[in-house]
Length: 328
Image 1: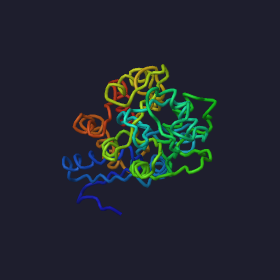
Image 2: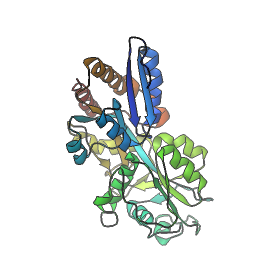
Image 3: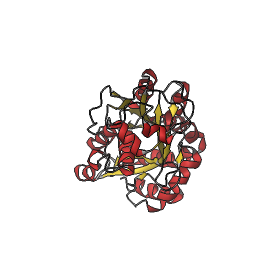
Image 4: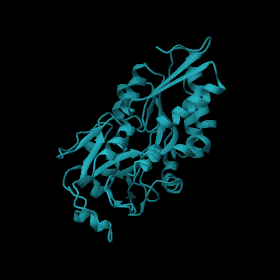
């Protein structure tokens, strides 16, 4: 086990690989400001982060997914505290295609259920007139681990095409349809590497990995929202989508930000999953101070811009502060 600094404390975090680049930056900065506090972090997937926080083996579980009703009943006393706003990209490896392809939830549900199997399928070409698409076989890539990215992606598929993608197949772990050649990777970084290695691949990857995606020359789709507008995740399109949802975020912080009527359609709050009741008041204090720093100083553009995240809107920031203050 990691030793705390002399007369100090340790705050441990595991979970979301989408959130990991931000928490890693916070870890360094907070440690410099507070030498007596050791922050530890590791990317294990959102499902593991939630389970670890529930079991008390870590102080904070990082998750792209809020606690489900089943989680709430299974793990009483857990909170999901919004930290920042992220987005999920749809990426692909189709050699020769330079234009960002337009894709909607109906087509993506068709691809991931094995009904659309080649890149020049009429359903894809209809959305992309004038783009020369090859007959390359589509290889679907999904997460092997329990993942908030999977929750976001399947939520989008179901929201756009409820008959093509069942609500019963939405979650951090799902029963993927049997598609010949389908592949799985662990972690967001694994998805980038896997897709780069497979010609014809399609994948869903968190926006904090954009620089790796670009260096590996993967394509990034323009994705349809509820109004049929296509966009890629940028500060402007994430903020436009957020504006349609943030006012309806409840005091619990648990909110789906999927398939809005404006902006980019697959966005989410990044969450800290934390036990409201900590083993000691000193530990509660250490966790509260770190999280409060994260949603204030740690949410300046200095930290968020490199990972392409957006800060919480003012009303959601208030919700997050209230939740943090319940930790004792």
